[in-house]
Length: 112
Ligand code: DGP
Image 1: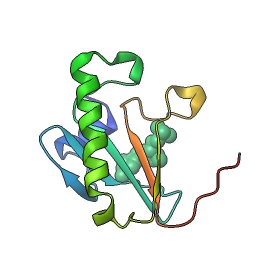
Image 2: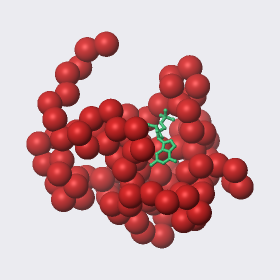
Image 3: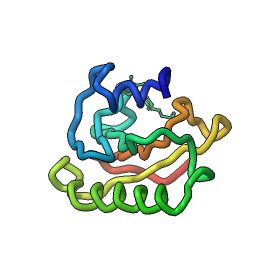
Image 4: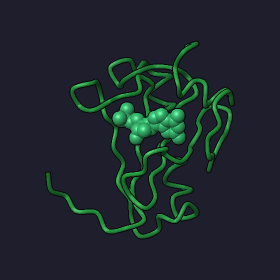
């Protein structure tokens, strides 16, 4: 998608602080961290929400979760972390490119 911020980050047209990259996913630091460590994991392929998952994208999302699990300790998240995916504007999704928030680096409460 030409004007998508995360597509531009994936293409290297907008700088980001990358912590992991392979041919199909990218993990980088959130520009507006909500916790001491706040990363975003995106598929390089553009789609907005899990409503658009076909089998190939579902497998891609599974591999993204697998990579997060494999690398979280190296990213400073050995004590635990939270994964959040906002789906749609009403849920707070501001960038219409599927992304997984990876939150941690401090104790996280589970209260509204
Ligand atoms: P959401 O509200 O769930 O769509 O989360 C979008 C996140 O993306 C938000 O926490 C801020 C982050 N973000 C937006 N623009 C940029 C950017 O240009 N660079 C980086 N690193 N993060 C961004």
